[in-house]
Each structure stands twice: as structure tokens, then as C-alpha cells.
Length: 246
Image (cartoon, rainbow, N blue to C red; front, side):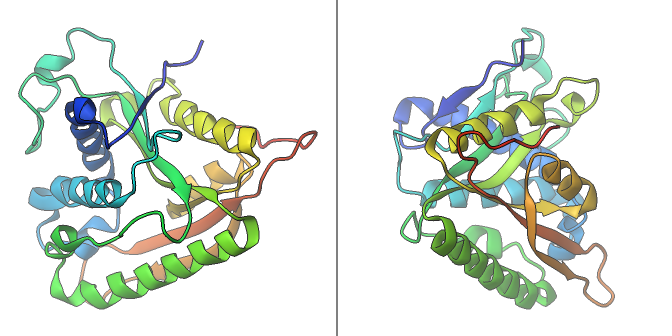
């Protein structure tokens, strides 16, 4: 039996503490990525906040969708986890509040889904990274529009995040989150769009039926880190079609 997955709607006031926990998990899981030092002058200090802030600005820019809550969550059922849930980084989470094991941000995308303005995130960028950030954002939006023109409304996956201490040991948390997202897509005959970070992640998604649409890379002279994004689409799975295996 796989991990239990909950769904959270960011528009419900009662969910805000749990929503904040999901953002913490995204920040914690994405801070070590190879593009963090390219975008930030002090990634060790600000990497977690950068990704947490980005995820929050995306999430709260979305129009609430009670029929498709955008957060997929695997809660931590270990009663001893709460005491150390926020150790090791600067957190906006309440002390002692138990963070989830894993969380994903995935939502129905259409051109009017929300306002994707990220002023707090962009304020953290090193100046020399701003042109690449803007170029990548324009490319990303163009590819989203192309996917919409081809498939209609689809599920856009912005983050699948597993806390570092749960990434090894065969828990299958990332696979469980992706499987839940794909099940929702298949039930409605929808495509799924995402940007995989690096070749290993891209290969993992390919095993689940994703197809490469565009490969974007960037490195800045004299700046550590690099961007390596593989934009991928999983076409709608119709009745009787085979599915990718993981």
C-alpha cells in the first residue's frame, strides 16, 4: 500500500498552516539544485527562502480551484518528526509543527489561470542572472501556450518535492505524488506539462510517458551553477492506451 496523499486548496483559510508546510518542503528540496547558485549570490543562506518564496508566489497567484486543489501532500505520520521538522534552515513554519514528507504543486493550466508575478523572488536574483531569468520565463510561457493550443486545458506540474531525509530508502514518495497527478490527468483525458531539472530527472519522467519538447541550458561567465531544464509533455492517455512504467 502506497503513502496516503492529501489534497490542499490554497484558498481555504483553515489550510494555511499546512500550505506553509508544503512551501517549506519545496524550499528544502529544491535549494540544492544546480541552478540555485547561478541565480543567487549567497545560495547557502538564501537558497531555501528563494524556492519557498517562488512556490508561494506561484501558488497564491493562482485562482482557487476547489475541484482541483493544487497541492498534493504526503503527511509525516512519525510522531517524533515534529520536534526536528524545521532544523537546519531558516523556516517560516511554526516551531514544532510537523512538515509533510513530500509535496507537489500541480494545477489545471489555461491562459487565465492566474497572475504569475514574482516580485519577491526576483528581488533575490543576482543582477547578472536577470536576463537569463527573463528569457527562460518567456520561453516557459510560450511552451505552456503551445501545450494549451495542442491539448486544451492540461495539468502543469511546477514542483514535486521530497524532504532530503526521505529521498532514499525506497519510500517511493516522489513516484506516489506523480502517480496521483497522472491518475487525475488520465481520468479527465488531460495532458501533463513540466520542466525537469537535469538529465536524471528527465529520464525518470520519460519512463512515465513524458516526451521532450525543448531543452534549455544556460551558464553565466564567472558564476557558479547552471540551468538545465528539459520541458516535457505527457500526452493525454486515452482509454485502451498503455501508460509509462516506473
